[in-house]
Length: 116
Image 1: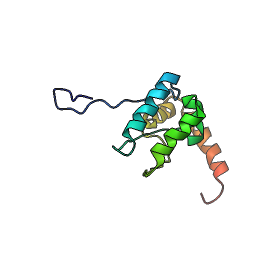
Image 2: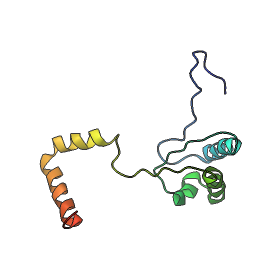
Image 3: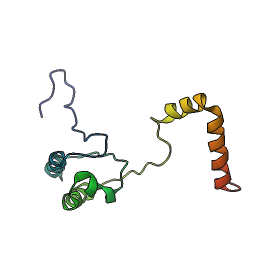
Image 4: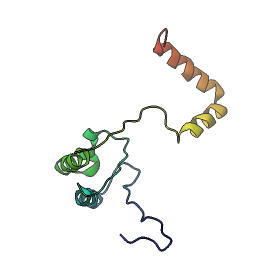
């Protein structure tokens, strides 16, 4: 990939946010990871578990080979908790439906049990 004239790095290819890719998109993604394997660092983020990648990529064998390359010598960071991007939506929802958000909070507290 060529660098743009303004010195910025080239755009990073990204799969669609829908969580589903076309068959040809899956093949291109595999080829990209395969070319970069053991030659360059690759950062991948996903909210899908590894067991779902075969369905997302439409091919269990290709998904397994892709995960083998991605996970070999990897540093995995598993982030848990509320989404930072969704924070504003939660605040807006509470402002629009204040009684509903209190009911959900009370129900959550009941299920959490004492001392939690």
